[in-house]
Length: 344
Image (cartoon, rainbow, N blue to C red; front, top):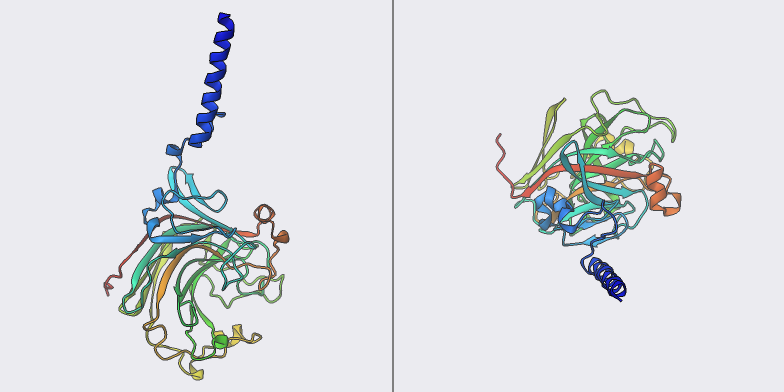
């Protein structure tokens, strides 16, 4: 009888433990499992996450990023004692209504006009860009790691910061694009690209399978660098730094156009857009003055089946990850705040 009572008590204890496991969300079946208190979230590494919302490469959206993560898309990776926030996204998934490109990317909740401005910084390394695509398509093998995006008018982008590396190259390029805020019909819009380290957007292969010369001053995958975007009283000040590269700075007005007449269209643009419907327009003289903008940061994958002929394996995300059709960017530091008066 005593043995039966002992067995019943033991059984009740096991059932209680299992029930407790279900209620708390903690899996007690494995000694390797982490409790909720042991999980490190992106908001633990970069604490500005309360100022952002996010869209992930599988279409997941969230506007509450404190203690938020999602495996395979947005999570923390520790490397040699340093925590990094990982942004990962396939070439094909679920994206926004205005784009064919997937993203795991933050979008700033607060909006501002260029005259008010703001500042965004990031210290990062790109770990992977798509290894599939056509070499003569300008967006192939690239990812956007920071943006300024308009939220009205034509919803164009006064800034996109890119990293691009061709599959057979060791070094890739960092460059930034400015998209004109067109007068009238937006079909005439174009991007003007400026190299930071390596090539700009216009350097492509001579055919789908031929690559251009590798940049001598480029950035390798896994090589750390930083950017600062400071929009102060309508002027955009850009600073790019890297341990083994010269610091590079740029200044660009967001309230007075450099491309207000057809004579202002650069040769680079004429070359890049020669065989496209868009690209022949001009910009309104005040550019983005008075227009609502906001920052974005993360991994905005530029490879897709439509424009770059990238392989997407039927849209299967696991297969894309296994076969190189994805972008992955790690950030260890980032800040978001008010603009500051430039030192020069």
